[in-house]
Image (cartoon, rainbow over all chains, first blue to last red; front, side):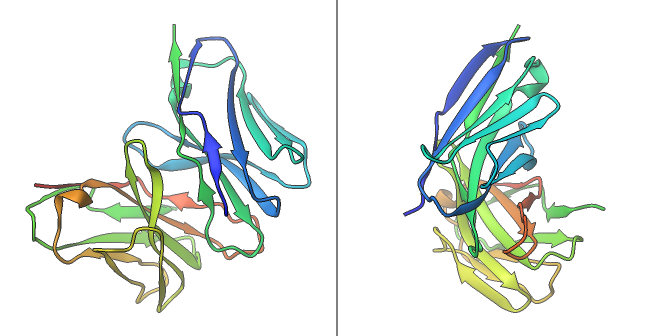
Length: 111
Length: 114
């Protein structure tokens, strides 16, 4: 069955890089997504990667995909206090109506 | 564009009361979803719809009903609220499968059942 795993917490110092990791089980996943949830708000799409890509960069965000190990990571460069949030990894198989979400990683950025 | 709008934002119910949560999207999306979010549980899918007039059960459908009478609206009903339904409810919508179709979320409804 499908399963997406994430560690629950990550604490970093302001200015450092953050790396949030995610593992998934279904090798037929087509798209993999990262969402950000700020306190009291809904989930916002941060970035995505198509399964035939290894890397995607968007300003401070870098997504790495290791298909062999079914491992996805989100790197945030120069982490700021405004990056404190919960980050969700999600996978969606081709032809499926429903994405599978991880439980989310709480990123805490301290001065 | 407003995106996905949920009403109300907050609600307190007594056990046994009923209510309807409203979700509206203005992106002409085919698919709509209702999730609940509880601490340590992540997002759990309650019901979803792949088009006007169609609904299907998700992971945790018991105690909830839904309707999709219009493409842009997806309603979640609680007929007899229970304290276990205290949660934050999120509605989401997306384009059809086969394209890059991320979910677009509303800002949530915070429901407390006493």
